[in-house]
Length: 522
Image (cartoon, rainbow, N blue to C red; front, side):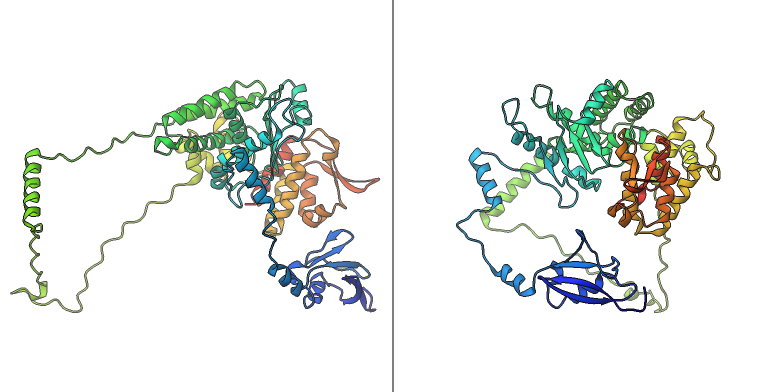
C-alpha cells in the first residue's frame, strides 16, 4: 500500500461515508465506527453479497453495506405487545392438534438433536399415508433416540424421508443389485431413511428404528468394519434399554435378552449379500464376541426378616394396653456419660504434644485403560490385547485390525519416507500443530474427502476461489499439502484454478479423513 491515505466506503441507511484505513485494517474498524449509532448485536456488514466478520481484511476502495437497528428502535420493538386477538403459529399448531385429538410429544435436547425433520412432499394420501403422517413418524423416531443422541453428543443436520422413487443414491444401489434403506450424508449432515415400501405404505417401525440407529453410528465410523459393528452393538443395546423400562432395570449387553437380540441382528448382517466379504466377516466377529459376553449375575432380593409370631402378639398386646392407659412407649435409658481417658483414676493426662498417628493411606487402584476396556468389550483380553494396543500407540481401531489378522505381517512402525502415506501423516501433523484454527479446515477437508468417493465428477474438483474453502482450509498450506497427498492435483481450467482428483485411492482418502478426524467437532 502506498503512502497515500486509503479509504473504504461505508453505506449506512442510504448515506455513504468514507472511512480511512491502514495497511492491516480489518472489518472491526467498521464495526467500531457504527457502534455509537446502531445496536452492536444487530449490525451486519456486507460486501458483494458476503457477510464480513470482525477479522476479515479490508482493501482500499471496497464498498461495504451496513445493516442494523438503532438502540432506540430495538427498545421500542421490545416494548410492543402482540395483538391478543391474533393467534401465533405455535398456538395455531396446538389448536389444530387438539382438534384432531393428537398429542405432540416431540422432545429433543436443545443442542444434541435433529435440526430439521422433513418428509417427501408429493404424498397427499391417495397413494399411501399422507406426508403429515410421515413427518409425525419421523418426529416420533427422533424422540425415541433423543437420549442416545445426548449420551453420544450427536447433532445431525436433518432427519429426512428418502423418496422411494426419485432418490439417486437408492437407484444406483438398486442397479448394483442391493436395497438401500437409509444413508448418512457427510458424517451427520443429513440422515435419509426409507419410510415407505414400493406401494406407498410404511415399513415396519422396528426395522426403521434399526436403520436409524445404523445410520447414527455412521456419524463416528464410516466403513462397515469391526469398530462400526461394535459401536452399533452398544447403541442398539442402549436403545433396547430405553424401550424396555417397564422391566424395572437397565438393560445392557451383559443382559441375556439384549445380548441375544443384538447377536442375532449382527449375525443377520453377516449374511447380508449387499455387504462385502470383509464387512460380513467383521459383523460375524462382533456377533460372536457379543454372544460370548458373560451374562449379568442375577441378584435375588434379600429375604424378609424372620418374625416370631409369639413375640409379635405380645408386642401388639403391650402397645394396645399403653394406648388404652394413655402411656407412651417406655423410653430407653440414657447412656452413661463417658469419662475422658485423661480423667480416669490412675491415668495421667495425655501430653499436649502427643498426636495420634494417621492411619496408613491405601493407594487407589490405577484407572483402567479405556483402550483395553474397549478391546475387552469386543472379546480381546490379556497380554495379546495389551501388546496390540502398545504396538499401535493406543489406536483401538488399528489394534483391533491387528488382533483380527494375527497372521498378517506386522506393518512397519512408520510409512516409507516420501510416500503418499507419509505425506498425509506429515500434513495432518502440521494441521494439528495449528490448534483451534484448524478445526474448520479439518471439517471442510473431511467433507471434500468424503464426497470424493462418489462416482460423480463434480465432487472430485475443488475451486480454489470458493469463498468457504478460502475461509476455512485454503489459507493453510498444510491443508493443501494433504489434498495433494491423497491424489488431488492443481490445474487451471475455464472456472479458474482448481484442485482435481487424479488418483482415486479409497485407502488414501480414508487415511486422510482418519488422520484429521479428532479435529472435527471434538
